[in-house]
Image (cartoon, rainbow, N blue to C red):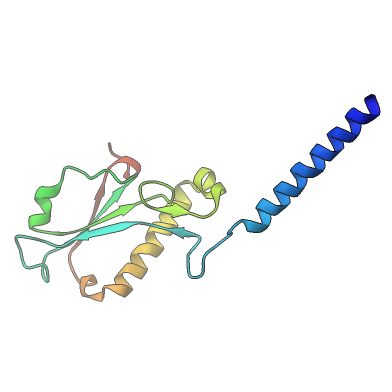
Length: 140
Protein backbone atom coordinates (compact mmCIF):
# COMPACT_ATOMS: atom_id res chain seq x y z
CA UNK A 1 0.00 0.00 0.00
CA UNK A 2 2.85 2.42 0.82
CA UNK A 3 4.41 1.84 -2.61
CA UNK A 4 1.07 2.69 -4.25
CA UNK A 5 0.83 5.94 -2.27
CA UNK A 6 4.38 6.88 -3.26
CA UNK A 7 3.64 6.17 -6.95
CA UNK A 8 0.43 8.20 -6.70
CA UNK A 9 2.33 11.09 -5.12
CA UNK A 10 5.03 10.95 -7.81
CA UNK A 11 2.40 10.91 -10.56
CA UNK A 12 0.65 13.93 -9.02
CA UNK A 13 3.97 15.77 -8.71
CA UNK A 14 4.78 15.02 -12.35
CA UNK A 15 1.35 16.29 -13.42
CA UNK A 16 1.80 19.51 -11.43
CA UNK A 17 5.29 20.01 -12.90
CA UNK A 18 3.94 19.45 -16.43
CA UNK A 19 1.10 21.93 -15.86
CA UNK A 20 3.55 24.52 -14.51
CA UNK A 21 5.87 24.04 -17.50
CA UNK A 22 2.92 24.41 -19.88
CA UNK A 23 1.76 27.60 -18.11
CA UNK A 24 5.30 29.04 -18.24
CA UNK A 25 5.50 28.30 -21.97
CA UNK A 26 2.28 30.32 -22.47
CA UNK A 27 3.45 33.28 -20.37
CA UNK A 28 3.82 36.53 -22.30
CA UNK A 29 6.99 38.20 -21.03
CA UNK A 30 6.69 41.37 -23.11
CA UNK A 31 4.84 42.93 -25.99
CA UNK A 32 6.56 44.44 -29.02
CA UNK A 33 7.37 48.08 -28.40
CA UNK A 34 6.21 48.02 -24.80
CA UNK A 35 8.78 49.59 -22.44
CA UNK A 36 9.63 47.86 -19.16
CA UNK A 37 8.32 50.90 -17.22
CA UNK A 38 5.93 53.57 -18.39
CA UNK A 39 4.66 56.65 -16.59
CA UNK A 40 1.13 57.85 -17.24
CA UNK A 41 0.58 61.55 -17.86
CA UNK A 42 -2.28 63.87 -18.59
CA UNK A 43 -1.86 67.36 -20.06
CA UNK A 44 -4.58 69.97 -19.58
CA UNK A 45 -3.89 73.10 -21.57
CA UNK A 46 -4.68 76.52 -20.14
CA UNK A 47 -8.34 77.31 -20.58
CA UNK A 48 -8.52 81.00 -19.70
CA UNK A 49 -5.21 82.20 -21.12
CA UNK A 50 -3.48 81.63 -24.45
CA UNK A 51 -1.98 78.16 -24.02
CA UNK A 52 0.92 79.18 -26.31
CA UNK A 53 2.24 81.60 -23.68
CA UNK A 54 0.93 80.06 -20.45
CA UNK A 55 3.50 78.51 -18.10
CA UNK A 56 3.97 74.76 -17.86
CA UNK A 57 3.35 73.19 -14.45
CA UNK A 58 4.50 69.63 -13.78
CA UNK A 59 2.28 68.14 -11.06
CA UNK A 60 3.98 65.13 -9.47
CA UNK A 61 1.48 62.78 -7.93
CA UNK A 62 1.80 59.41 -6.25
CA UNK A 63 -1.26 57.95 -7.94
CA UNK A 64 -4.18 58.73 -10.17
CA UNK A 65 -6.24 60.81 -7.75
CA UNK A 66 -6.78 64.27 -9.15
CA UNK A 67 -5.65 67.17 -6.99
CA UNK A 68 -7.82 70.10 -6.05
CA UNK A 69 -5.93 72.57 -8.22
CA UNK A 70 -8.25 72.86 -11.18
CA UNK A 71 -8.43 76.62 -10.72
CA UNK A 72 -4.85 76.75 -11.96
CA UNK A 73 -5.71 75.24 -15.35
CA UNK A 74 -7.29 78.53 -16.34
CA UNK A 75 -3.86 80.17 -16.42
CA UNK A 76 -1.30 77.36 -16.80
CA UNK A 77 -0.72 74.23 -18.87
CA UNK A 78 -0.91 71.46 -16.26
CA UNK A 79 1.03 68.24 -16.85
CA UNK A 80 0.01 65.56 -14.33
CA UNK A 81 2.50 62.70 -13.91
CA UNK A 82 1.77 59.45 -12.04
CA UNK A 83 5.02 58.29 -10.48
CA UNK A 84 6.67 56.09 -9.39
CA UNK A 85 5.92 53.26 -11.82
CA UNK A 86 3.28 51.02 -10.29
CA UNK A 87 0.97 53.76 -8.97
CA UNK A 88 -2.07 55.19 -10.67
CA UNK A 89 -1.98 54.26 -14.35
CA UNK A 90 1.82 54.05 -14.51
CA UNK A 91 3.21 50.54 -14.69
CA UNK A 92 6.23 48.30 -14.58
CA UNK A 93 6.62 44.91 -16.23
CA UNK A 94 9.04 43.87 -13.49
CA UNK A 95 7.46 43.12 -10.12
CA UNK A 96 10.74 43.86 -8.33
CA UNK A 97 10.48 47.48 -9.54
CA UNK A 98 7.35 47.89 -7.46
CA UNK A 99 9.20 47.09 -4.24
CA UNK A 100 12.75 48.24 -4.84
CA UNK A 101 12.60 51.27 -7.12
CA UNK A 102 13.06 53.94 -4.43
CA UNK A 103 13.57 57.67 -4.76
CA UNK A 104 16.59 57.50 -7.09
CA UNK A 105 14.83 55.30 -9.66
CA UNK A 106 11.67 57.41 -9.43
CA UNK A 107 13.66 60.62 -9.98
CA UNK A 108 15.52 59.03 -12.90
CA UNK A 109 12.29 57.76 -14.50
CA UNK A 110 10.54 61.13 -14.00
CA UNK A 111 13.49 63.04 -15.48
CA UNK A 112 13.70 60.70 -18.49
CA UNK A 113 9.95 60.97 -18.98
CA UNK A 114 10.07 64.78 -18.93
CA UNK A 115 13.03 65.06 -21.32
CA UNK A 116 11.32 62.71 -23.79
CA UNK A 117 8.01 64.52 -23.32
CA UNK A 118 9.65 67.84 -24.21
CA UNK A 119 11.18 66.22 -27.30
CA UNK A 120 7.69 65.07 -28.31
CA UNK A 121 6.10 68.46 -27.50
CA UNK A 122 8.85 71.05 -28.16
CA UNK A 123 6.39 73.95 -28.04
CA UNK A 124 6.61 73.74 -24.22
CA UNK A 125 10.42 73.92 -23.97
CA UNK A 126 10.76 77.66 -23.55
CA UNK A 127 7.85 78.31 -21.18
CA UNK A 128 8.12 79.39 -17.60
CA UNK A 129 8.24 76.07 -15.74
CA UNK A 130 7.13 75.06 -12.24
CA UNK A 131 7.08 71.77 -10.35
CA UNK A 132 4.44 71.14 -7.70
CA UNK A 133 2.73 68.08 -6.29
CA UNK A 134 1.46 66.01 -3.42
CA UNK A 135 1.69 62.47 -2.07
CA UNK A 136 4.94 61.00 -3.43
CA UNK A 137 6.03 64.53 -4.35
CA UNK A 138 6.46 65.14 -0.62
CA UNK A 139 3.24 66.76 0.54
CA UNK A 140 -0.18 65.30 1.21
